Image (cartoon, rainbow over all chains, first blue to last red; front, side):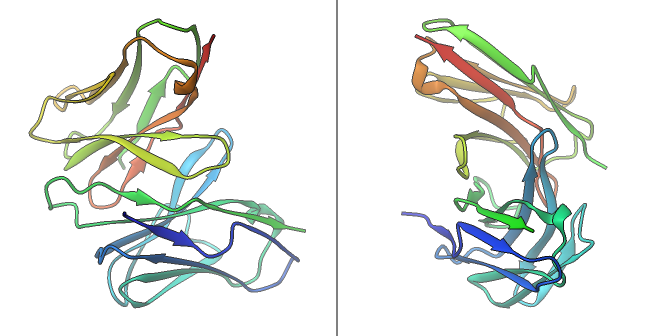
Length: 115
Length: 109
């Protein structure tokens, strides 16, 4: 069974803290993504990675960074958490877009509250 | 920049009705379009994937169509059930993946 695992389901952090959200996939996928989801705004892409050590900015990269040292793991880092980063964060993975039938798979989400 | 719009934002129907959810996108240069279901507080589950060369895909009571030239897709749900209540999202794939805001469906018993 396909699996994308986000290590933390619920986190509460203080303003200014450094926050790490971890995501692991077991499908040997090249592409991995981080989105945030907010009511009324839908899913917005923060960063994506199409290979180890490669990354591309999405629509809202400000205040975030990412790390992909191994193919199966894609980490999202909030350098200095702020209250406007309170959200649900979703990780996903897929084969490259050129591969026919390349379904994207999502993790269960990480609810982050910054106080 | 690719923009994806879903209409309606919310829909409430009685059990047993057939219904159609709409998705439109601004740039027809896509690799594929995918429909997802999201239950409250959960991640997304893929329902149907349509490659850019295809016109439709079917899975059980679900049928999704794609008209790439007009930038439209529809998700048809036959004989709706209360268990179909969820938010339905469509997404198109250039190199990353762009989502609509979703349609929140409620099926009343």
